[in-house]
Image (cartoon, rainbow, N blue to C red; front, side, top):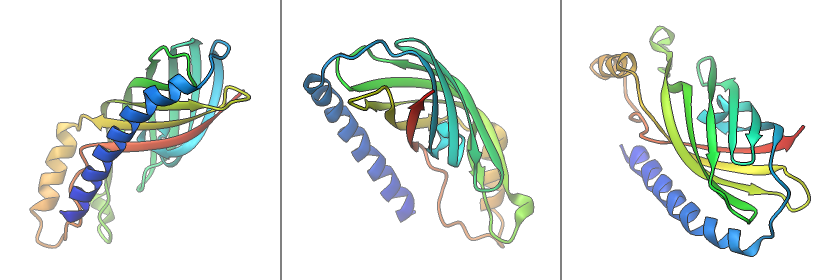
Length: 184
């Protein structure tokens, strides 16, 4: 449980860092051209479909996009699709909110592959985007809250009750994603 506690503490620190960094960086940067078009991202985390993963994003308007991501989710392929809304800002750093559907939980038991599973469900999240100076490429850092399916929660409880399984960490209440996105 110490691992779970440390991860949760790290997630809260990241939230505080993102909260304080976003307005400061926005004030220091200059306004750039409208943000639209296709982007391809690579990274790690649920919002890019796995560890590692890739994500295709289309900004239909300067502050609204749709995306699809796919990658390796520890026991198989994972995917997500959703929308993202950026908060208007004149700076390079912009906060955003996201909603998606797709994989949001994985159970992996070493030596008992029949218990492994990838589970689907909705997820909401937020974070910051940091645009490059010379182009529209950007870093994206997110903190996501998955809404686990009852199927996953039931499977997890059944696994925890098994005497032949040693649990090393509990389900994480949040996921973190980091990726770099290139304009196409």
